[in-house]
Image 1 (cartoon, rainbow, N blue to C red):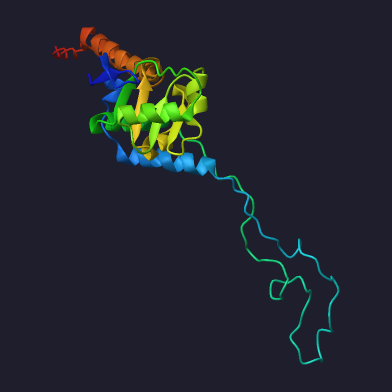
Image 2 (image 1 turned 135 degrees about the vertical axis):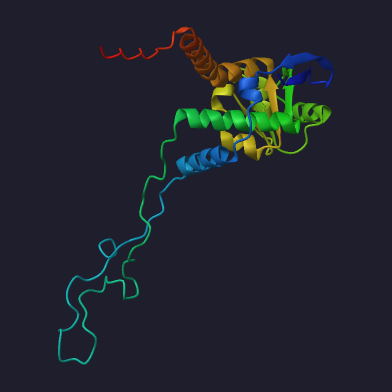
Length: 239
């Protein structure tokens, strides 16, 4: 099981925490992580880009000149895409880009990304990020004390109001809870900071089902080993 040192906001070591192998010790699956990132970005697209077709622009509906005899090209309407100010042909229209990804795949991608962050040494566990008051300056000083420079993702309880208010003016820092953790934030930020409670919640969210599956497989294997094998009876010799 991977072990991470626990520190307080003064960068003093106060203990160690053992992380679950099922969540923080999974192998890295590049294709699964890539699929999860594509799904997240597709679901975040607004899909509001639009152009006006010939039915949306203004202009006369009458025929400007007769079909034959003028020597000019035949025309039906000013709103044709061939004319300046006419409608656009085959332009983008509002659409929904989102699509569903199986829950097990999304959880597997999170486990893979979390485990890779642990192997990189970019996962930190902080004991009680308690600030006396919501001051961005004090929060920035605590980040510097912990040596967390660059883009930092903090996973803690949203009930920590002082932390939430202090961090929202920091461009390179984001605070979420364990239920709001997503694959894009994990890959975008350089450092991942967890509280003890958040680490336990992630193990329950991402590791419980995996543990149930492993237990089910173990029980099935035990049952199959205990069950006697069927043997074919020898054929009776013809009299």
